[in-house]
Image 1: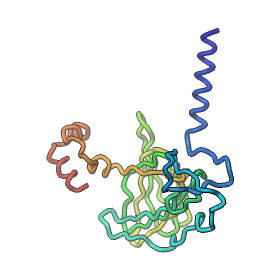
Image 2 (image 1 turned 120 degrees about the vertical axis):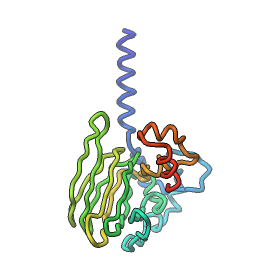
Image 3 (image 1 turned 30 degrees about the vertical axis):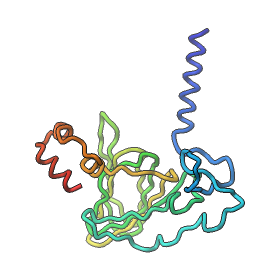
Length: 216
């Protein structure tokens, strides 16, 4: 009998963990973020709904290209709960991504969201890597109007494969998807990861690691 009870409790715990694997569903019409609230929450506390205004659900400027004059040659214009407080608890956001010719959005992960990438202009080479032990690379060349999905948490990238500027819109299944850019996180952490650790992890000389850390 005790074994059955433990098994039942385990199944319930597993079910609950699945139910809360992404942003929680709202239990009211909306929960406009109150970023200055002293209340700590997984997300943002709600301001009084009677004080909600149209601007809490509004953003303008997504038609404007981002500044792509940087070494990777790309720029993200986010539209998440920071820009639109009304997105709080709704579990969605989006972003515009501009690319210079052959610009690259380096390998990165979205810890809290699946992304759906829609090409507005240009040609892209995109891909993601499946989890261990397979580490299988899945890639595709995209043209204007094409759509590609990047599963939540997997390392992925996008590269402008054309001679001209390119732009895409990305839908995200979280109000605040987060991003971990692999080169920045590994070689640009603060404080730095020990070069002994990175040299052994990447099987390179410590001088190579030291050089990369100065870049990032």
